Length: 485
Image 1 (cartoon, rainbow, N blue to C red):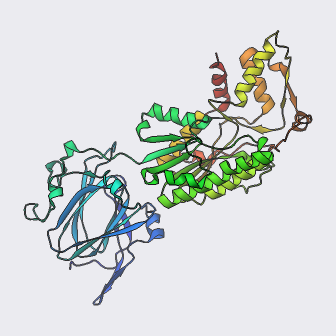
Image 2 (cartoon, rainbow, N blue to C red):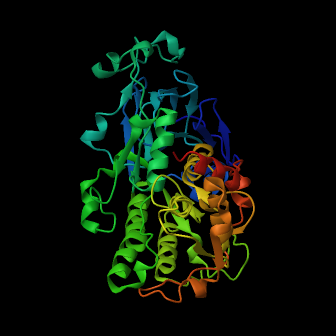
């Protein structure tokens, strides 16, 4: 057996291939043998190795020196170490779109050195001793279907520049490994897919538009409630979750007044609490990153500015259901919750309603002379195209998982002030908006009315700390209104 370097400090080094990381392990040994912590989650993630969602442990026994295997790129992340003996390892980036596609990295692994290999980076090794044991911790279950998605490159391809210690003509190789394609003919491994739920809503349409603008639609799947009811446990068995690395949940129940009725309450909780809880459990089981949209309604509005650490205090059924969904999603290890307010996009929204009312007031034949709008609820508008940009920013930069407030940037205004602005921009009739209190506005309401938070402004500092700034919502409001024909 090879000489093992005992008592090294645990450390992690980069390799020049994004995500491929070498771990020097602390092995304790004496004349009796040795002991090591092969995978220690807290220590290793603190040093920069991703939190591997281990679901399977595989072991390769190699009877003789010179056994050589690979190069195989598989559709999962893995942590590789040696249990006995030593190997010369080679790893090749075979990921579609990677800046280091085709680059190879080599080193010797023994029980004191391991390596973290991200999905799509090809793995190969050559046993340097008889009786070598090579082990893999992986974050997806092997299946015949997933094996069809493997990517291979030939061990002997000179373009890789791999200098095998034992010449391949003297090594033991499988016939399959000898026949793998050279790099110039390799089909790169595509990234894991992204599933977008609630794709026909305002945010769902904005996410689709951004995906099309980026030209990445080939790896996205789109679904809405008529195809996948996330509140129904029976629906989850219809989806092959191993295909997905990310789920963006754009779905939800937003009829806040109807949620106060017996029928609405059931639908609201199914969409905003039960559905996210089932999604969170499924994503946790499969190591999927879950993106979920929250609301200012999880707060009672007594604070003028809400940050991510404020305790929940919802006033309404809708707010209670959103708070329950947030709590469930927070239990998924890989999650982003984007808390927003006063959403405007492609669909029914306050701005479109006000544009229509402004047109009616401006029409002398309509008969509508003025409108009343509440002036004691304060917040900022959020445009869905910016919310979509924020989602992809957090995913792209690998921001720390957690909750991020995400609204338009700028002044905090009342609904009445916003309505006046819209009327003025549209027809110059802002004076036809009459401000009233919430109590006055709903005094004659015949149906159920949900209580609203008086203050909905959210603190944007945490989102800004990731390198992303939201646009000024008042500037965007002017553009949005001007875009109407």
